[in-house]
Structure formats: structure tokens, C-alpha cells
Image (cartoon, rainbow over all chains, first blue to last red; front, top):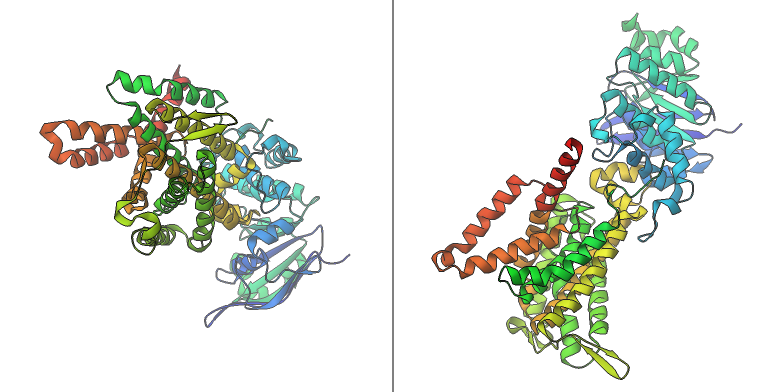
Length: 250
Length: 330
């Protein structure tokens, strides 16, 4: 099968600082790929280039063989790349259902529509998408709660729900388990395992139990460059990775 | 699950309540000794404020240049009627409104390249530019500091007969009908999927864009709609006063409409009307009390500060919060 996502020598320099240095990655459909590396390795910068939030300095990004290097965040979302953020980015005073409805409207109406006299009922397939998404992230009983009133773990699940409601083919998860208790982390891992049957996932995560429990492939970044790329057992055995990163954890 | 409009769970009774209020408003004002003309002026500003609420209360765009649209719609409508280029009041209003919307689209396309305080400063600059154009280069059309006197009262030709709205109550009815249409349209907009995207932009513009909404286009369209509301209200002001004042273009006018919207409660649509009512009524009454005639502005300012600190979401927002609490406890 052909790759759903491919980067070729993707590079981002901020002035003299090279945050991401010629990173090439190929992601097969239906897989979970994890990005790991110490703080400042360039994981989030790499993610932001994939989602179109910052433009690359050089290199290319292909999504389903289409060149999306110069796409902005709105276009990548419309194309089928969903992302959830390390720092929760919700719509605080809207309800959970409304929070999920906003991305669902983008998926169902496109990037712009002048339906100033339209109604929600007339947006094709909106309701099932919202219901399905809320159920998938386990917030059905919280649907009418304001997002700002949710517990932290629930907010994190809503964060993933907002990304899911864009109906992505590729889901970018930036530290979905950040700041979670062990039981919340376990729930999040279970959620991501369920998602893998419907969507390809690329995940940035610091929790090694989460990474090795989920990933089919792991890419290790250090100082912006790839130092290892392979299956979890290869990464575990890799001497360079052990020195650079995993060693401290043993 | 039934999905309704975002952030607004009230039914169509709101439109009914507004219609009932518009019918009773002159009598209410008569009962407290205020005239019908004051009520008409409040409705005109309430209509202007509907547009301000759409951009500020629902989308989070703070513009200090809305007088540009109030003035340009007003002067174009007045000029057409005074010079008999157009005799039908509604047609003249429509042209003034469309012209203001076009100015809104152009200014919006330029100012919306910036966000936050930089956007606000750009709108302020455009507002001042329009004021200057009105006073100096376009003086032959606008009458400069004198404004345009002799704007005819509203009439609608209907075949053989003509509907005449020239009496005080007639003008009120004409303005109230247009206010009601403006209110219904604004509420349809905020309850639509388009309106849901506006709310998302207000709450978190980065995320709204990141999930796939073309945020700048939504902002431009709502800014253009707000300019149209300003233009329509400006046209009505000239007809109502029989005179189109240059102050319609002033920075005071831009500031005052924001103050009214905030006092009344932004993000509520009826907030600007309530704010205009309180503001204009108090201003009128305070000026008439001899003992405080000299310091009425000071008192009005104190009232403003009290209202903003007491009701942080405006009068209507405060009442809505009280009603919610009462419903939960009762």
C-alpha cells in the first residue's frame, strides 16, 4: 500500500537555530507512529509543519501523494489531517456537544459557506457525526456540560474529540496523556487503540509505557535530527537511543 | 441528540417579546414622560448596535470605526432623497445600506489583516479618514460641518396612494418595522451554522481555523453585514431628524455605540437596544435637571462605571444570569 504521509528532508530553521533538520518519515495507512525525543528535540515543530501551522524552511510533505508543503492549517484540516494539542485548545464556554459540533461543521460544510439563514438540522450528517464522536471519547453523559466545567482528564478527551470530529484520515496527537493520572492515561491508551481501526495516527508522547504500548513504529529525534527509526523492539535495542534518551529511564 | 443553535437555547418567543415591546414602547415612554421621538432615536441606535453586536459580541472583533458606515449610509440615503434622485424612501435606504456594506467589505479586507488591538486601531484610523472626507474633500455633497438639511420623512409609494410616515408616531412605526426585520435577520444569522462558526471564532480563533474553518472569510462577511446595519441605521437617522448631521461620522459616535452595546450586554442582540435606551434616556433627563446640568456627563460616566462593574456582562447578560440561577433554584 502507498504511504498516507511522507516527509522528505523536512527542515525548519528559526534564524540560526535548526529546530528540525532534514527529517524524512513515511507513514503507512492504519498504523500508529510515535515520535519521541528529549525536550527541544523538535517534535512539536515537526508536528506543526505537518498540520500547516508553521511553514517549513525546506523539504516537502506529501499527504496521499499530494504535495501539501505550503498548505495552511485550515486546508490540511479540510484535506483530512486532524490534530489535538499538548495544551488543551477547546471552546471553553460552549458545551461538549457544541465543541464537537464546530469541527463537525467544518467537515460537513467545507472551509466556508454563507448559510446565514440555514439551520443545524439541514447540515448533512452533522448529528450522527457529533453523537458518534462524543460516544467515542466517552463524554456522552457530559454532552450538555460546558467545556470549562469538565475535569482535566475529560477536557483532554474532548481535545481528542475535537480533532476526531473533523473526520480525519490522519490524526496527529501531541502528548495526549500529558498531565494525566495513571488511570486516566490507561483510559486514553484504550481510546487510541480503538481509534486505530479507523484512522492512521502519529503521536508525540513522553510516557514510554504509552509509546511502547501503542506504536507500530517509533522515530527518535534529537536536536532536530532523526537518530533512529524502526519497530519498538529495534528502538529498545538501539545503542544510540539508549545513550541519548532511554538510558536515563532504565 | 438534537443539535440546536450554538450558545442560544431560547425559542422564537424572543422575537415575539421584541415585537410586543416595539408595540408598547411609545406608551411606556409616554407613561414616564418621555416622547415618541426619543423612542425612535433609541431604536435607530439599537439597529446600529445589532451590527456592532454581531462583530463584537458574537465574533470578538472590536471596531472603533463603525461611524464610517453609519455616516456613509446616512449621507448617501439623505443625498439621494434631498436631490430627488430617488423618491422612494425604502429604495434610498437600500442603496445607502448596500453602499455602506461595500465600504465595509473594503475596509474589512484591509483592517482584518490585523487582529486584536491593531485591528481596533486600523478601524479607528479608517473611521477618522471617513470623517475627514466628509468634512473637507466631499463638502459639496455632504455640506461639511453643516450637514445635509431637508431630508424628507419616510414615504412608500403604493400604486395610486402613498403611505406617509411623516408624523412622529408614523416615523416610529417605520423605524420599528425595520428594527424588527433587522433583529429577526440578526438572530437567524447567529443561530445558523454560519453563526456557530462566529461563536467558535469568538471563543478560540486559532482552533476554529485549525479544524478547517476559513476564519478570515467569516470575519470579512460578518464585518460587511455589520456595516450594512450601520448604513441602514444612518439612513433612518437622517429621515427621522429631517437632517443628516456630520457627527454621524464622528469618533464619539463610534465610541458611543460600543458603550451602549457593552452597557446593554454584548452577545445578546437586544443588549444594544437596552443600552441605547438607558444611555439616551439618562442623558436626556440629566440634562434637564438644573442642579446637575453642568456635570451630567460626569454622572453618566459614573453610571457607566457602576453598570460595567456591577453587571460584567451588561444589563441583559446580568438579567439572563439571574434568571438562570432562579430557574435552577426554583
